[in-house]
Length: 176
Image 1 (cartoon, rainbow, N blue to C red):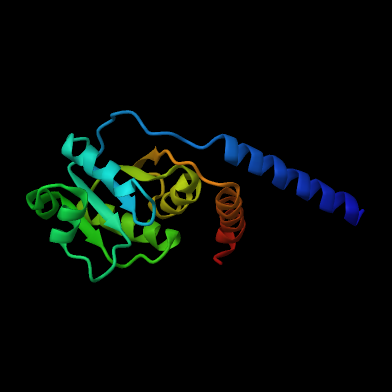
Image 2 (cartoon, rainbow, N blue to C red):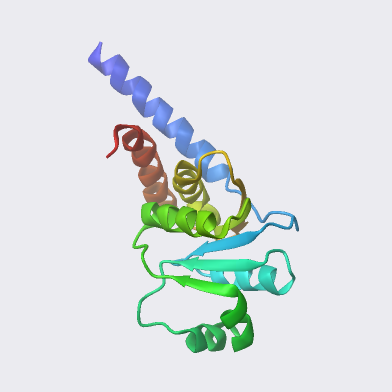
């Protein structure tokens, strides 16, 4: 009985991983949203967000999880955008330290501004967990569009992220 249960769980995990690894999302279309949120941590995320903001796909952008030592001029210089764009339209969120707190920080920022729609820009392999955490904090009153930055993750990166996602989906309902 225990061997069958363990085998069934292993099979479910393997099928889930296959679905996760082969179904990585891609970039979203040019839908206009009230805001863009970019959690720090992955190559190309902030650049994609800046590009969308410069093309007027949103009014404002939050970069969530920014180190406290980073200042707006450094952001402008690092990404080759005018300081005026950073000053007018980009907020640096400094409270988040992980994906879970990115979701909480973003939800509070969206509610404070009264935004009704947001584009989540993150790496393709990170989208499932980032979207889950943000959705948990948003509820159903704010439209969430996932906009994945394509990457070429290795097997270990995918396995690690899949395990984090599965663990979070399992523990979150219990408040863990």
